[in-house]
Image (cartoon, rainbow, N blue to C red; front, side, top):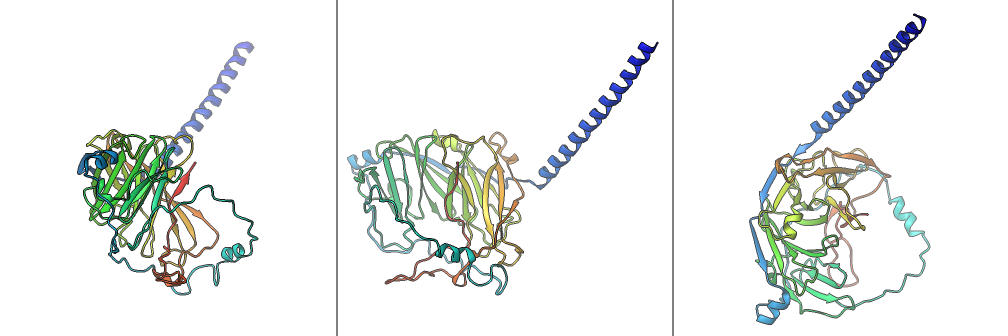
Length: 383
């Protein structure tokens, strides 16, 4: 009986311990589910799901040169995207730091060492357009350079492989504000421009931007997507834009386009769009997606979007950065989500200068330069 009693006691003890462990596990699962439910409650589903308006296959630049359909660059001076969005604004006297930015003062005191010698320099392009909007990307064997409203392809020794070409050589129009990327994980070049209410995007059909053709897509937005910026992530190409300044928390300002289908010329490629909840802006603004630039792609999902928040703006109490995460479901695109923002506090900084105006950096001669404000500069790199 003692043995049996011992066994019984042991059984009771083990049962109680297992019961407590089970209850603890249930509580952990319960709280985890609650946290997941809270996370789900704070997520917002995609508010836009569309298929590309058009997909056309454009012959290679080399073949266009050979058959006489190549369109040379126009050497004209004109203003692209003449829409005026207004200067950035702040609340006078609000925000830290007071006076001159201490980080800027510290940087001015740093002893500067000799710069490293440049490996190669050459003049790639000149333009009388305003703004010039130069952009470019380097692959294993090519440098693709673009500007308003043209592009040119070089080898990596600085030798031109084409004449300067109009963007109309690839796109159905020539509206400017190009962005060039090299997608190293697919070994493809990517070039874009905006049109009145949307994006024109071309992906090379192979690694050679001269001798390979192009898949050219058009995706529509519900308003003009100024200052579009692109990035490569595991599950999509991501786009942000200076769009709907008065309602970025309820209008689509972040987009994901179906990278896998675009690389294969599939006309059914989709685009999903999201607002940025709890964002504050002061006029012109530019959130950014993170661009993969390492040796391997990260796992699909949780694509980060980042933007600064300056305490000199109305509605911002302390300087910080906000970080959103996008999860795209290409099987059921309407179930794609964007998270509420995480807040990363920073030391005090100034995101505006010269009263927030454009044309704010004087040159020795000529008109002032437009240094963008309230902007995290492109690209935000992920390794």
